[in-house]
Image 1 (tube, rainbow, N blue to C red):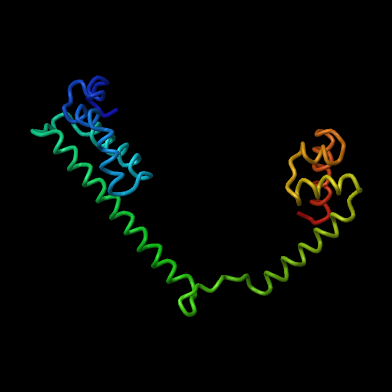
Image 2 (cartoon, rainbow, N blue to C red; image 1 turned 90 degrees about the vertical axis):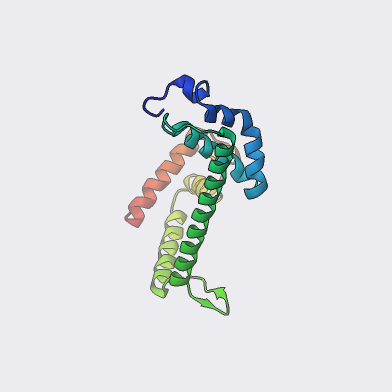
Length: 181
């Protein structure tokens, strides 16, 4: 709440602009929705309320409805300008950081040495998993590689969830030791 503004004032009891907002809120949603789409309309109406309720008490308006719609229009313009600036920044960043051929972006591929190192780490992980005891290995594969939950893994293996948790924990410890991480 702004300094010097009472709760009654924020409800619109003393402020004609807040009262105009509260009386015309549904119309404001339609006003914004017609111009920017229904998704952004509700956000803009909320932003407008914050502006209306947050202004100083000395700001009086001869025609609160006209001022309310002027504020709404200005808020919509500010949002559109911000979106344009963000799009321009995104375009400039994309142009500076991406390579394109024939109008199509070239996909960033990892460097050859990074790809080779990743393949080597994957081979080491596969070998380390293969050395785990069978139940531990199966629990690890179902949960970590196939995405089963603990309960689904327990059901597939015919064991308790607690046992699955123990198998996975032990597998992670063994793999960490084996792979040195």
